Image (tube, rainbow, N blue to C red):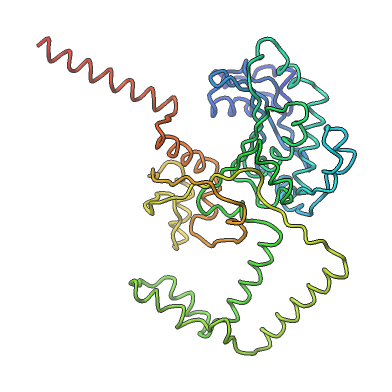
Length: 396
């Protein structure tokens, strides 16, 4: 690609800079030709997420890919967590049955899905591609990571009436995209992929409340000076010392001593409960969409796993994706209930990064004999070199 010099942008590429660097980075990272980009919109604002429509000729697929969280506006969309109903108007517009109108979605992601849906109606390029003779036998896939995964799942619902064979691939989706009924029904066309201890698929309103309460309760259980807790984090300990540590530093849950801190916390929880009753807040449980594939790391020798040292952690983040990567993963089907609690883990943030998810998927695919084009080319080149070497020995 000769992307160094400025060039005129195509009419179907929106929101790029004058040199086309955004499109260039996308093409370079995923390895497709510019002619295979049908449309790209890089604009980003509240309720507006960048997306691209491209052609994957190898797998005969039209791909609509939605970007995950990268900007401050995306973060605002992430935390706009209030459940919002699909609504009668949206169901009618998308050809959904009216009985879905009261089912709820993540508010920020629903806004992003509506914006892309309106965009698709405006320019009509997806319809044009799916009905063209050139792509007559091509499939449609809607994919995204993180925030983009949640938007992809909701957009898949909205497009399903027009494209019944549509499939959604959601990588590291948040744990609060759909109500349980929507999530259950989406299993027909949606697959979610979660890497090990990734915290984002475990984030929901309920899990955050439980995490807050558990954290405050843990503070109340401490029976040694706080500096002893931090000191033990930096001390070298054997297995026996670690096993005995909780009993030395924490009270049992049933034996938490009375204190002003503990009394205030109990009063706080009661006020929150009463506030929810006054506001008639519905117990609307939100969860992960579709069928869930959990990639569990079975090796602790992970080059990008953070440690307790802040400096080492910084070095780890800087070198993440270039250091040693484990090749040992166990892939299993699981249910949304397995992600109802937040786990504190050294890799809870790193497991959410796209390139770590990509490495895990490649490793999992390799275990089933599926390799990437680059690995396949390297293996073929190695075999050719071995054949040339054997031919040289025979001739000599």
